[in-house]
Length: 108
Image (cartoon, rainbow, N blue to C red; front, side, top):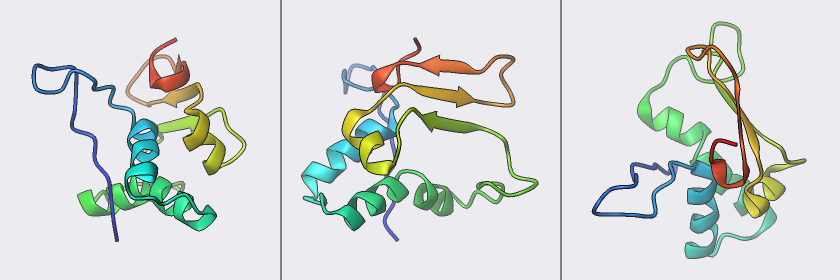
């Protein structure tokens, strides 16, 4: 299992941080030369499902009893989500409102 993490932020050591896992996976596709159809899905999973497994999150997934926080990219599939890095809806049960984020994951 391979997973990806994003601990960068806008700080003195790395000034390009955005906390955007789609951006991290997009860069990973190119650096690892994983641009085949199946490889694109593997890279997407590395930043989502596999990251949750590596952290030992017990309440991760789309099952009853799991936390209801979601990031929903405005894309028809994984390839489009990673290629376009589209606007997305962020749903977090700890927030009063759901937030719409623009392209690149920035609040819009």
